[in-house]
Amino acid sequence: MFGELVEIVFLAGVITYLRWWPQVGWKSPNSLRDLRLLWPPALSLLFMLLIVLYSNLPSFSVLMIVIINTLMVGINEELMFRGILFYGASSSFGIWRAVWITAIIFGSVHILNSLITGDFRDSILQALFAGTFGIWAAALRIRLNTIIPVIVIHWLWDCLSFLTNSIWNMVLLPFSLALFVYGLWLVRNYRRGEIKSLRGQY
Image (cartoon, rainbow, N blue to C red; front, side, top):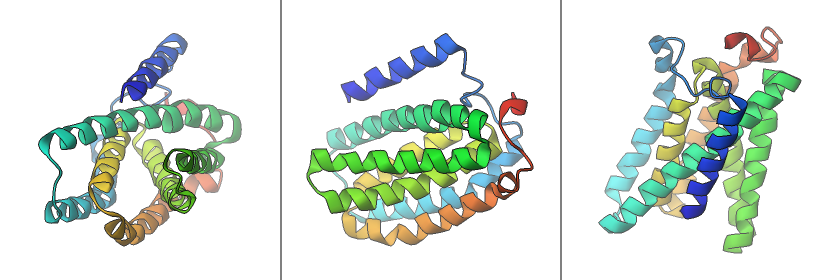
C-alpha cells in the first residue's frame, strides 16, 4: 500500500512539473450528457456488487484495506496508462494506435504478477482481462475527455473483483468481452482516421 502511495506522489509530481494535468485528462467532462456512456460499465459493476453481497464479506478491517488499496491502484494505473502513456502515444501515433498500444502494455504488465504469485496461468488470464479492460477504459477516457470517471470505474472494478472468488471471475468474462466490443464501438471513428490525436481537445 505504501508503494502505491509513493507511485501516486511520483506521478503527480511528474505531471505537475510537465504541466500535463489537462493533457492526461484530469478535468471535468466536456458535457455531462456524455456521462450516459458509462451505463454499460455501471451495469457490469452492479452485477459484480450483487455477487459480492451474495458472498461472504471479509472483516471490516480487511474490507477497508481492499477499498483503500484498490483506490490507489486505480489512481496510479490510470494516471500512468490512460494518462501519461496514452497522451504520449496518441500524440505520436494517433488515437486508434494509442488505444491498442496502451491496452497491450497494460495487459502485459499484469503478466509480471506471476513473479509475485508464482501462478503463471492465472497471470495470463489476468493479463487478458486487463488488456480488454484497457481498450474500453481508453475509449471512455477519449469520449468523455476526462480520466476521473475511468479512475472511479477502475477502482470499483478492482475492488469488486478482489472480493469475488475465481469461479465468479470466470462468470464476469462475458461482461469483459461485451465491454471490449463496446469500447471498439466508441472509438470506431478514430479507426477511420477522422480524428488523429487529442491535441485539439485541450
